[in-house]
Length: 340
Image 1 (cartoon, rainbow, N blue to C red):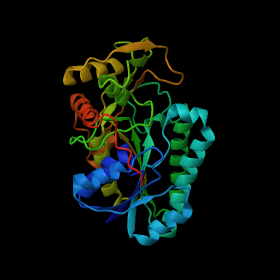
Image 2: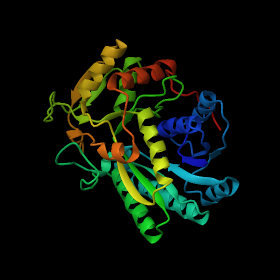
Image 3: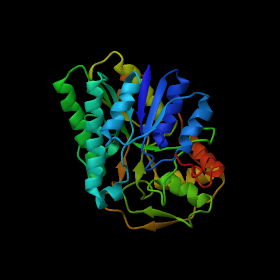
Image 4: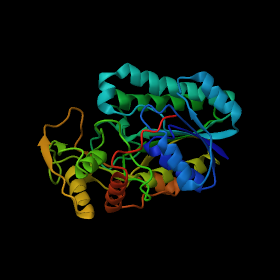
């Protein structure tokens, strides 16, 4: 079985590619490299000792998409490609709507023309907006507090409408919580361009001396230490959930939604303190005002994924912190500036 991995040079996509190859799948990777680096493709080959085609391609380029489907006998798609910075989405919403929504429509139209109707979509817990209680299960009402979250929500609705129009589609919508960590080898990991948007790469860059200190936004939330609580999940556990979803779609039509989280909430200070303890690195930080749109507590009820997919997260916060630090120390400047 050949799987197309869109956004396969990125943080989650590259880890998924490794797990797919290790599990015996053939893959094709496409990525426009706008927020990723071709070196990750070299590292995937290095880690797996396997070859696969790579296309530097944008989902907005329909002709190139058609070429990929003509050249390869693709049976399913893992769809990771998309712009993902919440703050940036507020500044340039039209770019986010065009890229994330139009790109997915292009992908689905061309999949249908080539009779490829099995899709695992990378959604997000942001679709739950500001939930009134936790843990969050898949039946919770959905909303979004920023354009990035709305693109995920809109794509979910588009995919549901698509499946209603053609019941032969098999679609899994995977709502991620907060992926951190890296491959245990330290060869692939999260490689942000410029100032990190996510907490863990900011912590590791402070730890290695690239940043002076960490800004902690808000210390007056109604939590055990005043800082926001999130469901941090190891990226390897996360991508194993994709493989389970892929297997589920082999024998199940329709659209199903699954939370991918650990079911445990940790605060920002819990994460900082665990990182310091495990890696023996103090992280200087300062408290700042809350950011608009940030919520106090968000963690998953992952029971459905356990019961239906046979998936559950296995790695704990200490392992997430250890693997993140190994990636950072082995790659102090991220991937080499390899071009393609």
